[in-house]
Length: 411
Image (cartoon, helix red, strand yellow):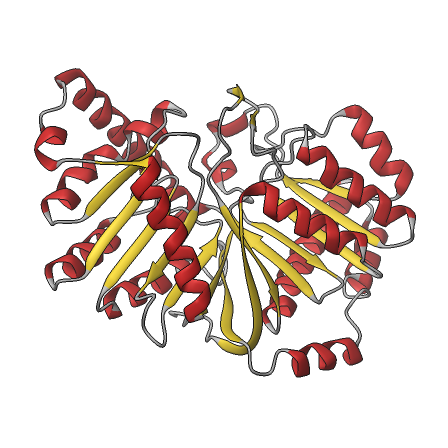
């Protein structure tokens, strides 16, 4: 049965945050004022620079009696450093590594289903959602110190969707704890965990106050991808918005390898006169992410779609704006790339909104990056690139298709 995408609800306040500098400052401020609960999910939690500052904020909150729950992914964060484990445990921070790899690691296709979403909910009243890991803008665990900050976005939200974010995080936390306790044969503790899983919730009075404050604010929704009820929800949201586009589509995506349906939707939009621009990762990060996407670029360029590569630093943004100057634009900020890992396997979370000011703000930032820091690909020159480069591209693309076949997925 096909599930409809979440309907946009009114009553939201949205703030666009660019990079870890803006996000971590806002997040630490909210955590510092937390009274009841902080829940945080992230793919990567790196304890260097700004990442350590976020960790310290969690410690301080736990020490003053706030319930703090942290979940990180077993690939993005295979281990929490021993000294931070001790500090978390001493302060009362509850932490969990989602789906540790074990001995066989990623050789098992079932382990490719990762926790890739980046969500934080404070007191059930404020949520943060986006593509930014808890990772210093100028530090990369594989590449070291960077000269320019990572290009990425998040959004701070107040309004009805915060409750949705809190609920999905609470459910995943309960499942993880119950499975761990069942593996340890502690069935009584698993039952107690289930019974108490909803214990910390925002008070009804607080929620009513927030609804009154946000009554005339933006329309927005939380759109999820998981492997149970929301397998295609984010992809369908993109397809619907692209199909309704009338003037312009602006996308920034770190790992851009759209499937057949998304490619066809973008090409059809360009053919009916919609300006389609995509800002892509231009800096080499790893073999698969750099080469596997390139075989589809030629088809998109031939259809008149503008492709711009960003190379001052790593581009990790996962955002899009459609018809920003209309009364009802479509804009999304989240964790989902337009590639098979995000759209078929990982747990993802995007905020989708219809807010003209928010849409124009994001579009202006993307246009500035394209104009001053991007390099537009030329269709003719791209088609004439060296034979060995094209061979590497098709090798990576073929490996990606083979890997998908192992999971039984079609893309």
